[in-house]
Length: 269
Image 1 (cartoon, helix red, strand yellow):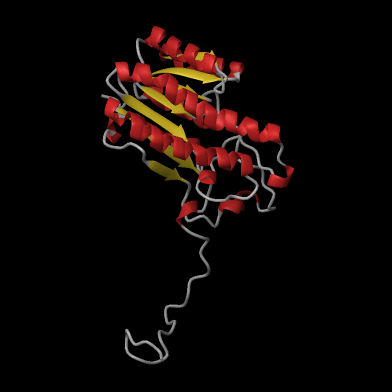
Image 2 (tube, rainbow, N blue to C red; image 1 turned 120 degrees about the horizontal axis):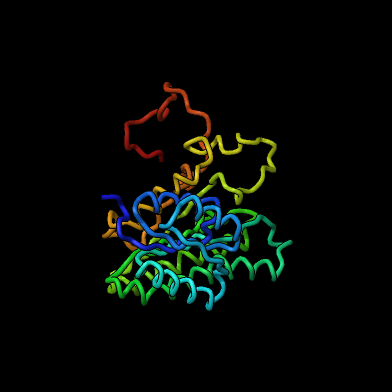
């Protein structure tokens, strides 16, 4: 059996980038997918590629009415709901000094309010199936004070807190809520190079490169599937090692001297 045989999933922001990678893999693993996005043409093209196991619907994730319509459509078309991947997001880089109230509000409405509405709309149909999995996409910017990411980073920090609370509240219903935190992934949302280094700007990460959408999909699939049945409130980082620590300095020589004098454990007085 494939990992998602018989499962029904909603994937938001699914017309391109990571969302499209998730949709392709989910269908390949036996799921039926309600793909949603505001990019109608790209969404319809992907559904044409994936066939009858996938449907597309235009979706503003910050709209409560849209969420009610999407969940109802998934249940009506596919007979229920087992998985929600809150993948839709907006991203830009801007100094706090230059950010606007409108920009800050947009980031929160899509990235955080959209995730809240998705969780809330999914509770009843997931409960009706005896439980299910919600996977929320945060970001490396939601783990540290990443410069020029004031609005985006704050919204993604919020996704983490909201997800932990939802995991606590919904566990008794068999509804698991987990978080994926991607780092530099090769999609249209990856900020353009301002360093002059080009592809080399990620060379100092422990893995020495940016990531591919499929590498995030592998983790999303795991959390969506029954393979992670005893996980909720978990945060899985997919960042090439960005969060492991600061970039390495040059390796010290093997013959680097130890203490100048004194036995091990001695304390200089």
